[in-house]
Length: 89
Image 1 (spheres, rainbow, N blue to C red):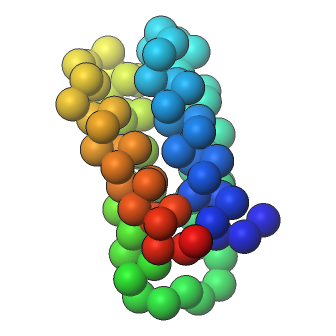
Image 2: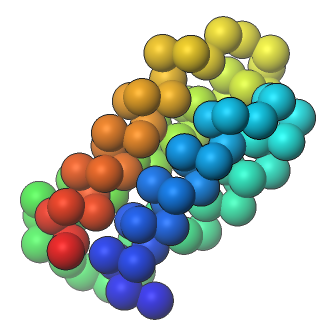
């Protein structure tokens, strides 16, 4: 799967997971971890965008796992993933 496809899938899953209870969203986010990890080398700008998406998704998953408020984290994770998708497309 190409980076643009991975990024698009991340955006798709994040938007779907945003509208389900935390107990359902957490496994969806955990499924993104391997998808968002780096494979091979990419231009620095793309790697930075990918790692920003990865960190935002991890922060979101951590908050959901701990039962903490995550309302402000969803838009950040989606925006980071969309930026990654834009740069790879």
